[in-house]
Image (tube, rainbow, N blue to C red; front, side, top):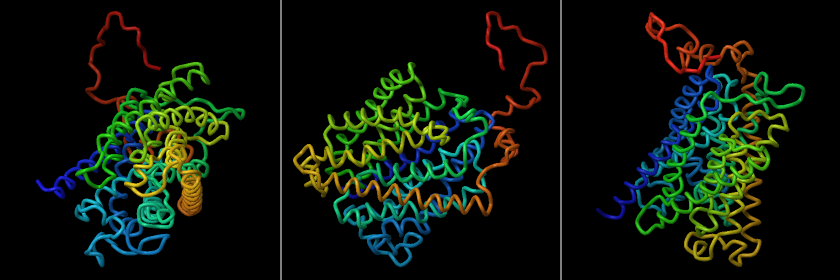
Length: 438
C-alpha cells in the first residue's frame, strides 16, 4: 500500500471517529435534559448533522478552504464546480479532495452541535434550518478560512492545529449568544437565584462524554490529513493526558467550591481538557498537555458558577466546557509550542521555549477576533429568527415537553402514557424492592 492510500484510509477512519462524536453529543444532551424533552434532543442532533453535511458541501467548504481573500474563500462551490484541481489551502496533503471534504465537514457538524447545547429544552425545532444554513454556510467557514484556509490569522502565524479556536470558541460563543437571546428555562431562576434542573440520566450523560473522548482521537490526530511520517501516537497521548487531567482538575475544584464530587463537573472537566488540547496538540510535549488539561478542568468549574450567576441558562455547561477549554487551548499554543514543532509545522515557539510574547500576542488577537465574530454574527442570526419565525417554544409546549408538542411522540412513552401490553395484567410482587416512582 502506498503512502497516499495509507493517508487516505487514516483520514477516512479519523473522520468516522469525528462523526461518532454526534452520538456522544446525543447521549450527553439527552442525559442532561429532562425526560420530556429527550426525544426532541435526539431529533435535533440528527437533523442538524444532516443539515451540516448538505450546507458545507454546497457553500461552507468553498468559503472555508477555497481561494479568495484573507477573509473568506470563493472557489469550490458544491465541492467540485469550478475547482476540479482542489483547494490550494489543503494542498499540503496528498489525499483526494473528497476525503478532505468529508473530514472537514465533520468538524463543521461538531461546531454546530456545540451551539445548540446551550438552548436545550426551549428552542423550536423549525429554527434549526435557518441557523444551520447561516452558521455552517457562513459563520463557521469564515473563521475556518482565517486559520486553516490561508486567511489573515494564518498569515500572521496564528496556531490552532485541531480547533480550540475554530471549533470550540466559535461554537461556544455562538451558543452563548443563543442562550442569552432565547432566555432561561421556566423555573430556572427564582427570587434571583439559580435553581437546579437536573437531567434525567447522569449515566447516559457520562456515556456521551466517553463517546466524545473516543471521537477526539480522530478529531486531533486526524488533523494532519495524513498518517505517513506523522506523530499520530504522540498527539493521541497528549490528547488523553489533557482529558484525564481535565477530569481530575474538575473533581478537585468541584470538591473545593461545591463540597461534593459532582458527576456533571467530572464530565465537563473531560470536555474542557480535550477542547483545550485540540489547538496545541501537535505543538506541545506530554507534560504541557497535562498542564493544559489541568488548567482547563480547574477553570471550568468556576465558569459554570459564573454563568449561572449572570442568569444565563446553559443547561449542559457548553460555554464552561467548550468555551473555557477553547480559550485555554488557543492561549496555550502561545506558551507551550516547542521550537521543534514550530519549525516543523510553521509559526513561532511559545513563551516557555524562548519565543517571547510574539506568538502569545497573535494567539490573543485571534482569540478575541474569533470570539467577537462568532458571538456577534450568531446574535444577529438568532435575533432575526426571533423576530420573524420565533426562536422559543410557547410556554405550554415547554411545560408539556418538546417531545410531544414538537414531534407528536415521547422519547420515553411508557413514562408518560399507558402502553397496552407494557405492564403485566396481574401485579407482580418484588420482594425486597424499595424503589418507587414519583
